[in-house]
Amino acid sequence: MQLAQRLDVVAESITLAVTARANALKKQGVDVVSFGAGEPDFDTPAPIKKAAIDALLAGKTKYEPTAGTLEARTAIAQKLRQHNKLDYQPGQIIISVGGKHSLYVAFMAVVNPGDEVIIPAPYWVSYPEMVKLAGGVPVVVRGDPANDFKITPAQLAVAITPRTRMVIINSPSNPGGHTYHPSELAALAAVIVPHEHIWVCSDEIYERLIFGGQQTCSWAAIDWPVWKDRTITCNCLSKTYAMTGWRIGYTAGPQKLVDAMNKLQSQMTSNITSFVMPAIVEAYQNPAVEHEVQAMRQAFEQRSEHTWRRLTAIKGITCVRPTGAFYVFAGIAALLNKPIGPKQKVCRDAVEFASELLNEAHVAVVPGNDFGFNDHVRLSYATSMDNINKGIDRIAKFVQG
Ligand code: PMP
Ligand code: GLU
Image (cartoon, rainbow, N blue to C red; front, side, top):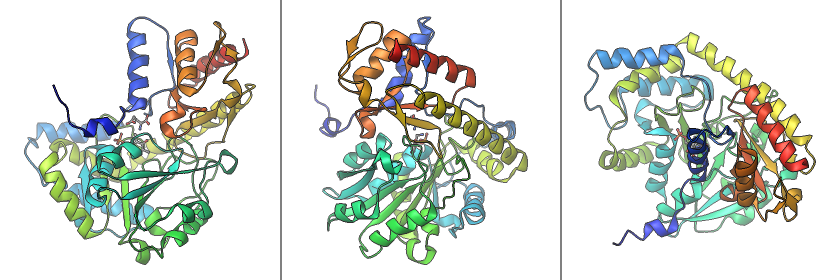
């Protein structure tokens, strides 16, 4: 049996694989503490659920326009105007099946075979794989932990070639937990501006989860007249509204790009589930929902500080202090290549370390290899304080004996 060659160039998502492994162990009765899944432990706010249930009961069960209902796209356009200072018309917005699908359709719309796509590392695992699926070539620019994983304008400048088609910016970042200040974004933008053939794909899905007074802004808002025609703004409801299972993402961009994405999506998935579209309007317009979003953000901020403090107190672990999202990307270089854990195993990289930690201490973390750092592991602190404490106690015991 032969499968398509494109399968040879992609890897399976490690984030989903670790989560599945932790869940399988839990099912077998093992008491696993999971820092794997990048998804809020909170439930979707009730008014959002009710909007979908009402729509379903009201018979909203038919095909809708490929890009999504006008009402949902109008609510998104309003949100982008009020919150992000971006002036997109509803016709310049396309709703897709989660942030992942939004990014994938966007990449398929702009990347030609052989095109280079600049991806700052550490990066979300799916970017390079999606670029490769589109025929492109990922060009990784490594952020220095000493600079909070942020890439510098000088690093970006040397990575640009005549083949560069796109730069991906993800702020706040999965897995780095770092967030670019508007002035840092502007400095990167100044490097890209003269290269008119380059798009910027701004993945803003963690935009509402920022901590410690950190400031940020949408990429296209750096200088709207300049960037409105060259920015692909991607977002989703998954993280902010605790709606990972709903699969709602969207892209806003210049008309030509959104038309191209519409064309592709019309042959792939058509519209997202019809009766979840009123839930988008509810999420963006109900003040009670906004209240819950702020409460969730506060909880993430407390967990962030706590997780970071406790982890950095463990000898051999180093961590950049998170300013956004819900991840700590912990450096474990000092723990590699020497005996560790109850079995005194020598781990050569983060994959071996994470596997040993799961088997011996029953703590699931995601190895950093597929995020571009093979001496780091990612912990998602989107779990209760009790779990965080229990998990870090186990890590400390595993590391310190
Ligand atoms: N971008 C980043 C940076 C992510 O971490 C994720 C994973 N949630 C996505 C996009 C995809 O989001 P979704 O779950 O809505 O597909
Ligand atoms: N993005 C989340 C994570 O990084 C969910 C899993 C995925 O889609 O990769 O864990």
